[in-house]
Length: 372
Image (spheres, rainbow, N blue to C red):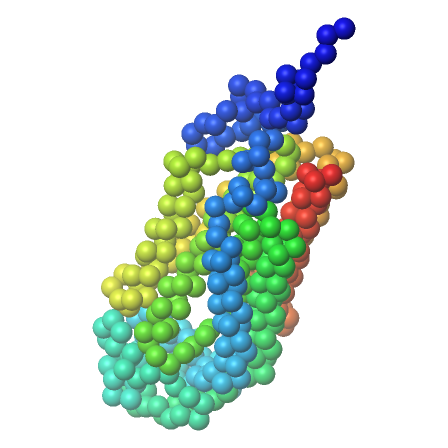
């Protein structure tokens, strides 16, 4: 009987690739049985994300939250909203603006003798403080009026909403960060990046005094929020069933390019206020963000449909589906439907915490299933 040595027999755990599982440009679909080491979403070395960048961005978000807590009590309140053309859109009942006599349709032409026309015209004014009195010069029809507006503290309902936004943002930050610290994989790193960016999207402010610092923070914040959208899409791409979508250079560029374009647009508007039309920015923001969310949703549903019922429950995909819906729909309904007139509609966004909880649970279950 002829025997073979261990060297002749080969490694029983070696990666036996099929012709379909070879690398390819763009979106790649390895075979169902193919699990190469460099495509394993649970393998830390497979991630291109830098751990120190994740820690730094999480620290920035935590500091941002601390500033937001302080700002919730010290932010001055005028009680009116105006368009980018300085035309008053609305005035809240019982607000300082109502007490000063400001009406919807008024055009604010100067504040404390500083003309509002032109980009960055009001930067010299600086940030107002609670109790400060400012002179508003408004144009109403054919008349020019001087109105005195005294800033007040935010109403209690607005402060409660700000505190809930801070709590929601901190929940996102904590869920993503601790999921990554629990198990350092490609999926959890993407999850940490996504949750950090979404945390900053929930956190209000900060409304710091120095104009340059406000501009810098606005640029950094938009970069992290857009990175979160890209990370979420790539996180969904790594979900089972057994077919992990990987990106080559061209495919990665296709995913990142819209976010990069929007970041440049937002940064240019933050640095040179008024140069880029606000309408153009709003359209770009709507198209890019909805494009990422729609892509992630379609990709997830495609994977969900192709997963057997037992695996959906075992990996937590069914819970991810329903928790994501429960986390996003209430806020959308409260913001864009008649449900927004309900007294508690302004607080429906707190259900958003359900989404990252389900994402972290899926990442943990996939890690467990692959290590079993």
